[in-house]
Length: 123
Image (cartoon, rainbow, N blue to C red; front, top):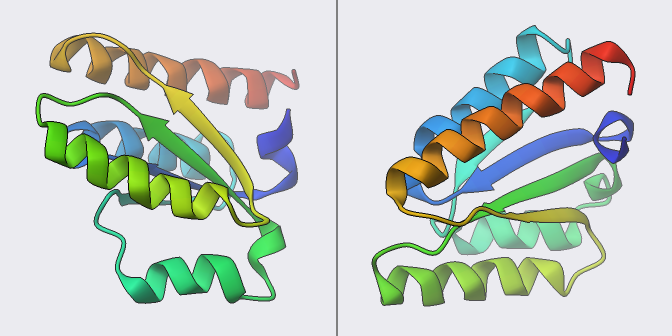
């Protein structure tokens, strides 16, 4: 599993705040991995520059949990921010989660649990 070779940083939109926090908490406690999380598209210039120019960026994998929201402007901003980062030489995985808001949240939480179960189980 690719996530085992890197320090994961999980990003998703604010409506899925519980999802990125769950991923980070499970990776930290159950899997014993250092992990960080944040919300997109709230990247500021300094955060994008740090991901694109820092010499240590090869130690991290960005897990972008992507879901279409009910706001077309937020979707466009998120697409742009994730797009800038995906053009750079970064380890990155974009996970698309479909459905309505409650479904997106539950799918993200279940995916976190399943991923950590695989890590802990050695798969």
